[in-house]
Length: 215
Image 1 (cartoon, one colour):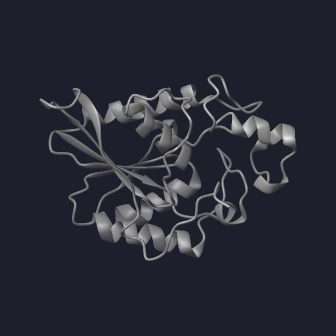
Image 2: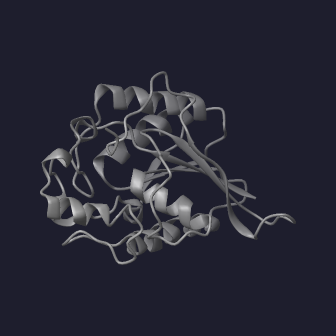
């Protein structure tokens, strides 16, 4: 059985300011750095052998802190990037026009072909996320990898592993530096392949993490 831990990056300047990030980037806040350190403390006893991160700065920094605690190196995989949010990237969430907000809402309300102009669909993101996850099956026996990615990217990955379509209503909250786990296994009582063991655990954090979509 292969166990894979999934970690969302720590809080960023734009998370705190409620700005849309997507594949644009902003640095971790001091709180975000502390959150990553708390993940490292939690995971250093779990035998992590590989830390794989999205190539964006906020995930790489989170991964570096965790990997340092776990005694391993960071590799990057661009397939783990956040959803491309097109023309709305870098915009304040509270400053969108009604039309722009309607574009954004198609990503969370179950619209099958929803996308922001210039961006990508949830299905396109889900496809690359599954490719990145399945690549871990090629790791040596006994490996225990940890992925550092993004809120929407990890949310669509977990949701689609549960059998939901990529465009399903977004109802899984994965806060900054939350930890989830998926296992690849053969079970008499579960479908063969990837199963979700835990999702969105923040018990290791000393204060609630922010969610960029929460008011």
